[in-house]
Amino acid sequence: MSLTLAGILAESSQRFPQREAVVMGEQRITYSDLWEQARRYASVLAAAGIGPGDKVAMLMPNVPDFPRVYYAALSLGAVVVPVHALLVAREITYVLENSEAKLLVVAAPLLGEGAPAAEAAGIPLYSVMGGEEAQRLDLLAADVEPVAGYVEREAQDDAVILYTSGTTGSPKGAVLTQLNMTMNAIVSATSVMVLTPEDIILGCLPLFHSFGQTCAMNAGFFSGSTLVMLPRFAGAAAMDVIVAEKVNVFMGVPTMYIGLLAAARTDDRRPSLRVAASGGSSLPVAVIDKFAEVFEADIYEGYGLSETSPVATFNQPVFGRKPGTVGRAIWGVDAEIAAAEVEGAIELMPTGEMGEVVIRGHCVFSRYLNNPEATAAVMVDGWFRSGDLGIKDADGFVSIVDRKKDMILRGGYNVYPREVEEVLAGHPGVAQVAVVGYPSEVHGEEICAVVVRSPDAPELDDQTLIAWSQQHLGRYKYPRRVEFVDSMPMGPSGKILKREIVANL
Image 1 (cartoon, rainbow, N blue to C red):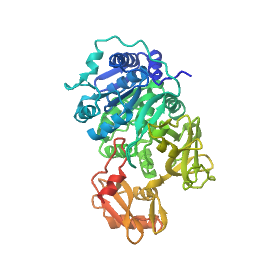
Image 2: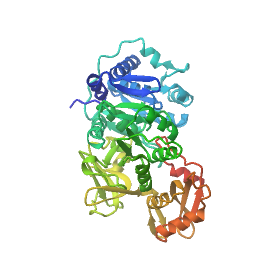
Image 3: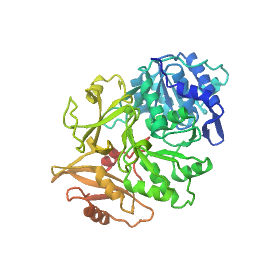
């Protein structure tokens, strides 16, 4: 069956030719122009020897050149390898070599890390937006004829390789097929967020990450929506862009919602948001409630991983919404709970029992690149083992309890950091919180809460928070230690990096 992700932009260039596809500052690019620009880029890449199945790595923030390069590579039948924009040269080199990338396209501001990585990997370097030390893809594209269209691909052909964060060893390349990426975008657009050509989406989620790439860019382009790009998220800057461009669809990770709430303390403007979607990590119910109070918008939370394209479950309009859950499995996907301790087989658990979230359906990736052992460990009996602990209720709504590896074993009792975080996030003096375990001679592991104070509570101290948590948590669950920080260590996709927190305790 013929299918290509490139068809999303190609089709919309015909269906919505004069609608704005991408906006950033003074740049306003229609669908017709964006597809032509992507095809011009494709001509240059083709002349460089790129063809079906070749890997094209790209290192860039949220700028219009991201979709130009992305769809240019896809139109040639090539496989896109988006590189996290916060990686250093050594880490980028690993991705280039592991993926066997044929060339790297870098946005000029990232050449400091990208150029030495391409040299170390021994592959050609192209730049956009400037850069004298590389061939200028954007300038070369201005002088060539665009390719006529896109190369046909099969549904099971590789489309995108997304590298996991490498929290347990070296990053792994999750290979997503044309079917994975195209279906996830279409289902996200039509039945999860129900996007329309009138929608204006804030593109603040990193496009090199699966959430922004699928839900904001690909789903938005499928629907003919406008993507307003914000290269670097900050609450006040986001509020300015949302108001100026009349953004009505906001997709973010929890830290972004916290940032908008912080901005609202000193900014009286209240934009009207039709859709507010959250993913990436668990959103405390206290933040959901506060956002509804301040912005009069309900946040719809979902769940997925790079290996699931990424959307697997979501609070969808057709089923209603249960705050604190990540919703029901999306169309064409099954999400169940399996016995977490059983290796090599999937034993499904009864309703309401806790276990490991397992997923099957069109969203599940093909494999880890050149890593059959890692693939076999997570693909069991046709199900993908997520590594997350969860519960599924009688209505089919899934709640994520925690990462299996983040669970704290204190004195023989299982403590789930997310439960403790939920309680602490309910304290009015807490802006952000992360709960981690650390070694204890007495209990094996002990519980530590790392907290960013709210600006309204500069005097909040550890004893106050410990006493608060003792009132709301069982005796073995409350944190014995509280550390205050000015900010949390963040990954490129806006997740709190707990491994860095643990390393600094």
